[in-house]
Length: 423
Image 1 (spheres, rainbow, N blue to C red):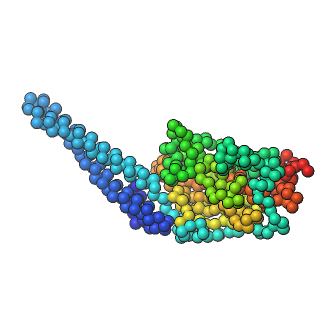
Image 2 (cartoon, rainbow, N blue to C red; image 1 turned 90 degrees about the vertical axis):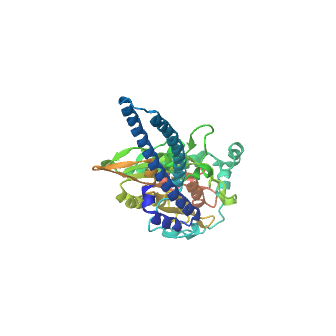
Image 3 (spheres, rainbow, N blue to C red; image 1 turned 60 degrees about the vertical axis):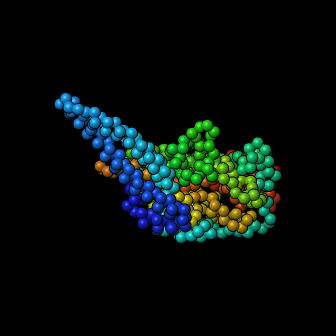
């Protein structure tokens, strides 16, 4: 709040770059309520001092055997007045907290200005997208035809956005997971599996408040939410802790299932292993000193690029524009992989530098000499398995409708180089 108060103009300019007039109104309300709360808090403290002085004065009069009735009458009125003001102050503080949680992170200067995803700026492209020599079968139809998945029965028992994987496609998913874990472990990342449920209070430190209504699944009658990504429990892992400078950076590579209520369009290309409610993902996460975070932002996206290069899947990286960037990140790269069937790039990974935004909300600091500072937090997808498998089913699809297994995954596939493994 001190930062917002002392840098109000910069914060407002930041919101203008994000193209959200509603947030600017929230900022103005926040500043006004903060002003009222501080004045009220000052008044309450003055009344408390007056109450204490009055109590001391009454005791002094008692010792002198002087009348105290008038002073007692005045003293009795003070607690009621203080209680009324404290109630008002609490209501103000509760509203201030909600407004604070809605104010987004400060954008990095390199984030391009724009209104939506169409204004994202391409910064790199790798591989040569090719037009297929024959008409590719939709990945969902191919998976069902080869008895690698069952979508209809999953919808029957769970609804749209769920699936059964079968046979070699199960092995392919775990091959992708092991491949990503092994590659990142070699780079010094600590392997991790997080809790799949989180309480609301720590979760508020990781996400925008609207995510609770739009994205996340809540457990009925429990203060628990299914995680949308491993990023969130890792971010909250050191909540209310002070880390040591010598221990930074802390680098994690986490495997988790992810649960999201959001689901996209219902066109044929959105079905199957795309925009699903439950999926497996390998996530990267770093806690570091503020001066190092932009270096690690590049490291994280480079890690993901290396994985897709080894999978021999063409991709491009975009710098996400101001209008498409969520509240939590100061800057974000999206890595999009090439869909041969649709002849376009589709998002496969996101890489964000959240600077101190999550750390402030979660109260995570590190000790630098005698001072304490907030850490910076960064996250990036390594591999989200459904979208990657979808593109593998397209990229490596043969005319005879068998699927070549990417060479880098074959050591994890029990010797299988082609799916189905039997003619």
